[in-house]
Structure formats: C-alpha cells, structure tokens
Image 1 (cartoon, helix red, strand yellow):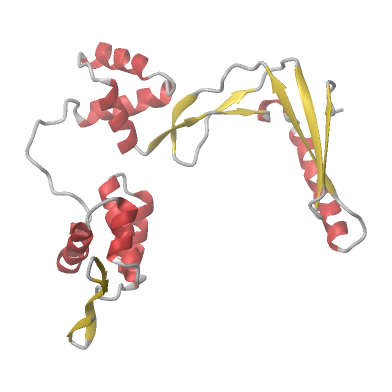
Image 2 (image 1 turned 180 degrees about the horizontal axis):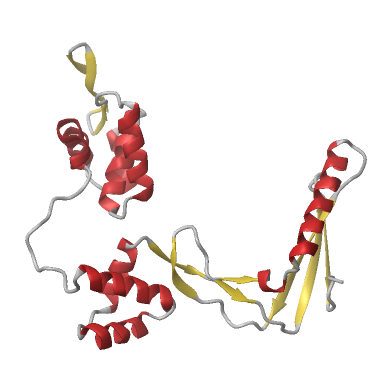
Amino acid sequence: MLVQYLINVKPLFVAYSPRPDEVMIVRYGQPLTDEQRALLEKTMKEDTAFRARSRAHSLLLSAGGTPIQTIAKTYQVHRVTVSAWIKKWEQHGAQSLHDHPRSGRPPKLTPDEQELAKHSIKEDPRSLKQVVERLANKTEKRLSISSLKRLAKRARLRWKRVRKSLKSLRDPEAFERCKRALEALQKQEANGKIALYYFDEAGFALDPTIPYAWQEAGEVIELPTMKYGRIRGLCSNGTNMRCSAYSFHCYTNP
C-alpha cells in the first residue's frame, strides 16, 4: 500500500508497508539550498555538540533519500525521534540543531576554569588523575574522572594510542633527496622501464606498551623512538602484488 500526501505539488511524506508486521517510513523534507547544505555539513564536521552533529548528519541523509528507519538504526534512536528532527528543521531551521538550555544543577566549573581544565588535559594527556589534582590545587574544586572525560569529549579530544616517531632522527636534506629519487623511480616504472619494489621493515621487541592519551581530532602525540634489541622482518612488495618476506637480526638501514 502506497500513500502519498502532496502540499504545493511537493512530496513531503511517503509511507510504505510491505508487510503487516513491518513499517518502513521514508520522509522527504523541503529540498536543501546550497546555504543550508553548507551549514549542515559544517555542523556535522565541526560542532562540539554530539546531538547537533547527529541531527545535521541525519538531515543530510534524509535530504539524500535515506529512509527514516535506516537513520534511526544508525543513531540508535526511535524513528519518531528522527521524524521530529526533520519537522523541527523545517519549522525552525538552524535553531533546531542544538538543544535548548535545560534546568538543573549549574556547571561546577566556570567558563575560565573549563578552559583551564582543557589546557591541563592537553599538558598531561595520559593521566586524568593528575589533572584532577592540578585543578583542585588551582580552583579548590575537585572533579570526578567521568566529569573530566565528558569535558574532554566536548572539547573534541579523543582517547587514542600515541605514536612513536622517527622524525627527530631524520636528516631533512637526506629525506628530500630520497623523496626526489623515489619520484624519479616511480616515473621510470610508469614508463615501463623498470619494475619497482618497496621494502618494509618491521621489528618485534620488548618495548613497553604504547600508551593512550587525550588528543585533538586529526592530531597524534608522537613519542621519540628508542633502540631495543629485536628480531626484524623484511618484506618486499611490488606493484604486481608479489610479496617476499625475510627475518634477520641486523639493521638494513646504512
């Protein structure tokens, strides 16, 4: 059974029921203008509020023809909630993306203290316990670890593994020379003059576990590498996807 309601000759709501025990709702709102689409895309990518990002993404999906039921499953909400997001967007526009202030206990930290907390997390991203003590000494207010985690997430920080880096050992001039040499080899391979193989070295060592830390989205904290005894594996791989592996105990780098 297909039911379609028309207002000003524009399809606003379509409901299709393939079986008595299954209802799939597809709702089409008013077409998005370029300005509206740009606003929703910016909110989805940059807004600090998770609910606002969710609503903006859902509206973009809906404008692209994604069914309400699919959007609801993606964000684990009821389809009535998604329908309400679309309806409020049509009525109130950008104001519908963010939650209105609610009554309740005021924030424990002032805006300046919240900025201090964010700065402290970035200074010591691996230990929130130390951040709690630092804030208690400076503000005479003690937060819980869970409160600090929520503050970090609102600041768009992510708890992820840090990365070891060899950049501190890199010779900039030698690195640029190698890049130019590699580009020349790639051009020769593209012209069919040579077969180019790439070697990748991996090691197995008694290094300590690489920790996690609170980090900015798109950025990674890098730790300076250290030398340990290890068993190394070397793999050569060409553009023909043929791979050869070797194990050894010495360094391959000159």
